[in-house]
Image (cartoon, rainbow, N blue to C red):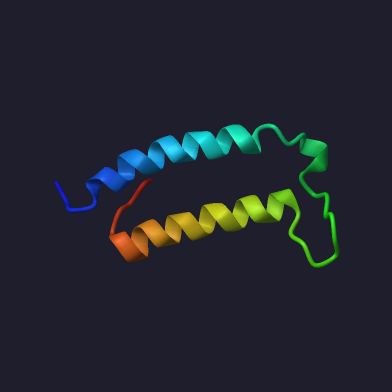
Length: 65
């Protein structure tokens, strides 16, 4: 058991909370951009997923696969 194993368990519950929020955005609104410089919800979701995956793997050595 690694020093950061508890992060994987905590991350799992946080991931479920985040997915619950993302599921509230209707598909037709995922590409809505409230301001030209702002990300759409879809762009932000992809950014969030890629960033969190990279952070867990590269910074903590945890593959949340």
